Length: 261
Picture 1 (cartoon, helix red, strand yellow):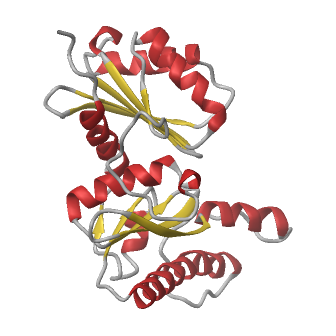
Picture 2 (cartoon, one colour):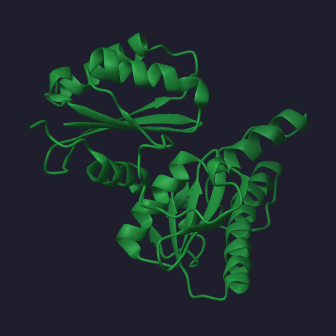
Picture 3 (spheres, helix red, strand yellow):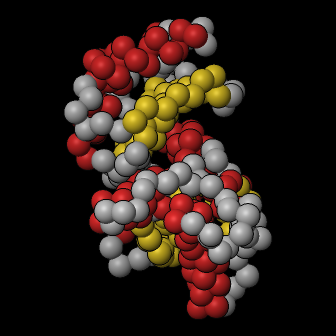
């Protein structure tokens, strides 16, 4: 079975797939650069037992990681506790099957490249893939599946944290969809600014990207807040929460070592 690991700025997601590409389990932990391989193993193996899985079931692994400080712990987890050397996105030996047509290809986040692979395989191109995580990213995929550029904006939760720190009289709020744009008190006003302001950001950037590009582009959204914001706009065509894991699965299948003779 395959252990797929998506290590982002906020969360690390672990998923197990069997030989028929069926997901047998999926678990999420907060990203902590100080967490050791031993700590990951205690937490993950206990959760695996709830799905009738044991470490010996895992015979391969793949990692996408945008937090360099967690890389050693995650790779050690795979080698020490699952006895497998993981494929790592970003390693020159791992072929994504993706042409990256930007000035500095090495600067693109691994998760965004994986998303692009999965999105093109599922929806064709050209595409805009919006990932609403710690940052909100807009990635452009061409008609032939090439990665053609991006827009990066601060994520909503990051913006709210900055507002909470900088404005002494403004409270920390949760993200939800207000029924009206105009708030009649401080908290409803903040909720409106957070939600409808971000809807405006999404609509504005997608509209400008399409106008500049000149092609009709499908818009795919993923990430924790994607479903919430899709309620407030019709500019998003499809919500797909499994893009990164599905992309990791696809890349592994294309790069897996040949069985020994």
